[in-house]
Length: 101
Picture 1 (cartoon, rainbow, N blue to C red):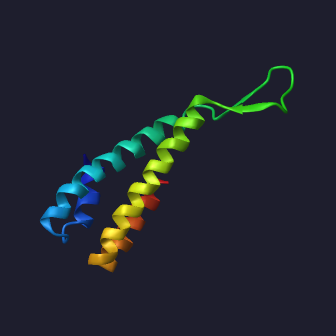
Picture 2: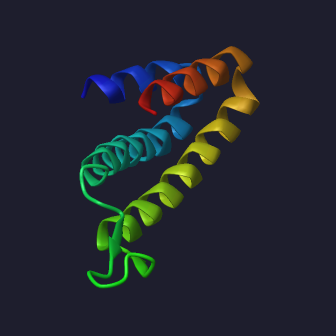
């Protein structure tokens, strides 16, 4: 919940109608961050036991890729909202997202 509150603070100056949408999107962003952190604990590549040059992505790799794409789409939407409102808030969002890496 702390992560969501950090992100909500950035969007405090947008209009109330947008806040309703942003609130749900922030839930998704926090969920995706948690899910990607969890997926990073698993191997992303599986090698053939007899030929290590033969490699395949694991289910965790595929899920991570899907989550990451959704995450990046959500971030783009959030940044576009901030672009219309407040440049300093956009900088703050970028800073918080970099902390997640």
